[in-house]
Image (cartoon, rainbow, N blue to C red):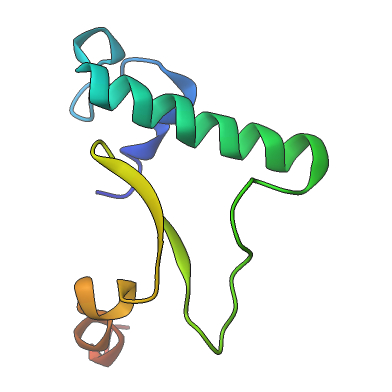
Length: 88
């Protein structure tokens, strides 16, 4: 869910989204990797992963089981469906 990343980034409890005190070791590792990348980007403009390339459609995906680049994010998350909705 959008905004759930805030619990990982700031390591603060947000009711309805999560509590870092209840993180598994895998979730704590995810928080470390995510916050480290955001911090590196803020400090030096380089988060530590390959920059987005529109031709490749690559993004960095963070999960408790690992962090890796992906070129299938659009398909995995059904972006065609969401982009096709005619919302006001």
